[in-house]
Length: 466
Ligand code: FAD
Ligand code: NAD
Image 1: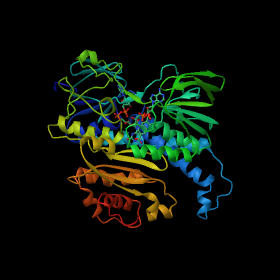
Image 2: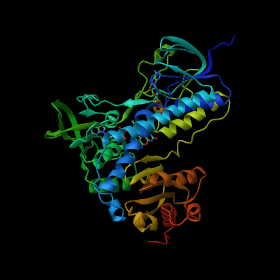
Image 3: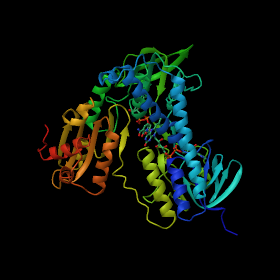
Image 4: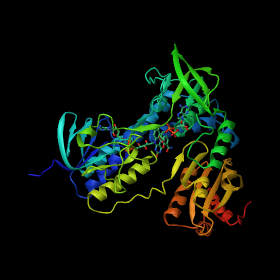
């Protein structure tokens, strides 16, 4: 009889966990994946990436039809009306299809889905929904949850003070929504409800929105979002929210201190970040401590300090992104199987799916300058023929390269399809490209991606179309 029930037990079936489980099974390991949720796919498929992108897509089309962008192209629509229940039903169908798809992949790859919350009870032993399960290697892929804001109680059922999950399921367009936190979630979900008719105010603690992004991008993004009608209040902190009837009143004050003011609104979206899920996981039972941010630390092979216990995804340090979790899922399974699983954390693209999209990979100009001399090339989407034809002229591409070696250190894009354009930049960086390599790569015409080539040409001062 085998010493353990499984070779590998993965805790959590998000993009990190389900990918790790599938790859482990592909590598011939007897694998199970424990999940506390009713469906597979984690935050991303159930209440994150997928439903938010479904609503972003639908609301973008609604705005194009209602706001006259289609009429400008000669497409008559008649009177445009919003059928919110149908939009939500379509979103639910996308989620169902994709979470069901993971279930199919588990069956196909012979991964056992163990239903219930998992908790370590000792080395190699986990309780899953009341049943003891043993495994030689255990992967923690428990993801993250919304960071609460002291003084602000989220109640998604009431639908007035909500988090991202609540904002994906509002049943009536609010007249006014206040978003606390000018980060990715606030701007994406704020965009959804603004396009569907809400007035949206963003309250951000810092002096600029989108922390961590390139300085030029942050400035340009704020300008564009204001042009779209967002009311953005930076350097402001929310100290409390009270709910009375169907309205919420926020108390806010300058981040640096000063007089408080109040703002009454129909909906408040709390989106000030996410924190790792380790509560109730029984880490004490295996003597595994978390760091000061509550994350599980690992080495670059995703081993924790406890033998046979590994961790990946949002629960470990690094950007909280689905594709980062997925790549770590593949790598950890390969490492457990005795192969060499690697993730290049220096080249992880990130995308904000607003309109225009905002995408980045590598170092910001500010970060690159801290490490040495840089050359920067910039190209406006206004000068890109395809963007101009499509009336998508907002934004630019910026390439940051090492001044001496010309190696590309970072690429930053604001453009309607920046999320697609960033892939070539990531691949170029993964291959150690110089800006000249990109500049001399033939790009199809007319495409938005030509702006990446022109920005690379601009690094040496030789773009053609500006
Ligand atoms: P998760 O997806 O959080 O999965 C962890 C799973 O573990 C969960 O299903 C949870 O139920 C389960 N679990 C936790 N504890 C236990 C336990 N003790 N026992 C059993 N199961 C447990 N990222 C992108 O890259 N692109 C996007 O467009 C994007 N959009 C997003 C939009 C929103 C609104 C949100 C909230 C997030 C978004 N993200 C996006 C982030 C992305 O969802 C996460 O980075 C990703 O889901 C992390 O994957 P994970 O596998 O580490 O964890
Ligand atoms: P975030 O870290 O992107 O933004 C949070 C914002 O809230 C920051 O700008 C921060 O300065 C601000 N803030 C913090 N405390 C505040 C306060 N008290 N008052 C006002 N502002 C405050 O976090 P998020 O938007 O909640 O997203 C969480 C995570 O989910 C992110 O790490 C992101 O990686 C991931 N996510 C990714 C995508 C994507 O890839 N497109 C989409 C959604 C979420």
